[in-house]
Image 1 (tube, each protein chain N blue to C red):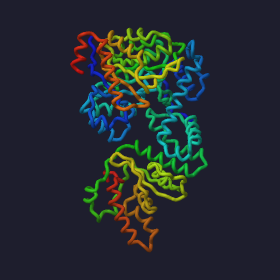
Image 2: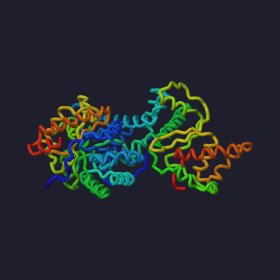
Image 3: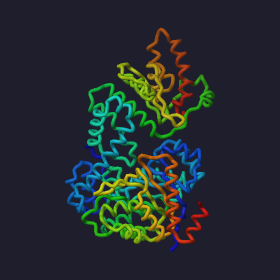
Image 4: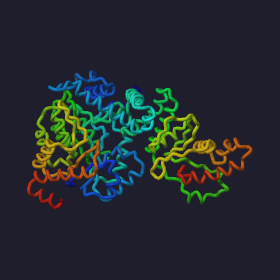
Length: 286
Length: 267
């Protein structure tokens, strides 16, 4: 089976401090990813801005509140608004996370872990089917950074994610930094995670900086990607091929040139790590 | 902590219970509630692992509130503001997928929790600004459309306020304080003074307009759905000696309101 997701190149998360500069200068970025929740309730000025940008760049919508793992029914208001933004922007794909964000009507505004057991696997599969039906499109699901594991979990996260993708046809947003963070926090080999995800299911790769507190790592998105994550990204490219790759930087957001340098570094790492055929693709694009 | 609207669960108890224990532990700030569910790590106890989520939850909500009430934070000072925000977060769960909506209850909380009436008014003003920023769009009644209206029928017309439009009547001049703070000018006190404001979003920007008391009264009546002729009667009755002067004022206000986008297009 071939990968149905186009390789968009090297992109960035669009963040407020760079709005004007991006629109004015149209920087050399292959695509932008937006956080859906930042816009679904925003006034028309934002929607006009996004439409202007969409005319120049491929765009991806990345969500944090679909609440796929929850036992609550889906929030119809959220889906209605998300669909409206999808119709407006026509993103290349729409993603969210393998997690729950709240229960009983609450929202913790965090990507909370779920137990990885058969019961939850069947639940998540049915929820993704339902979400895909509501949106009329295939979703892309990201592995979260986690800081705890449930005692009850008896399926490794990578197997869980692989089974979810296989059963629902959803794509995988493989966050290489999250794989690194969770592997550090839970003591497994991050390459084992990468190995388990089928290349043809990978839609996109995320990279980001994090905070290492010695005993555990927090996924802060507030700094440069560290060398160990670059190495894991190189391993991913070498073993899974080229996929749309994006830098996430959400706190202590630097000047736009710093972000451009980070995606150029991603391009260089990919170039060094990829096969000859893919390297030609990269060189043509650069 | 007031509960959010509960939805019937879709799952067997074991999975639902696990998620519920984790969430409850986070909302209550008590890692012991869920520690038995968590796999301990050699260098990090179950409680410490849960602590990452407990702390992250509070940091996110606190930051969301502080972002929407920056001037109140300046007025109260760090200690009082931190105490108020922390108390709000502990008392108030988030019930929306959108974190931008979470701070909207903080104004009412300040009214309950603080004895400082100037702080109440400043919280009301900053809350209105935050709410108006997120309020739904509505097309303005334009000057061109307004110019085509028949003056003879003005008295029977209804002028609907924009969706992103809020009238405020306050007992302290927090508008002056906020304006000075935004300019970086020293404004050490908030003077007791009755003020009337219209906060609205027009051309995608939140704007604040200071209103005369009668102007506020008339706009309040229009916002209640009264036709123009009916809405104008009570404020006009307050000026029995100056009815011509008042009428002239109204005829100045009306095109200004239209120009500043106070009303929506459907009439």
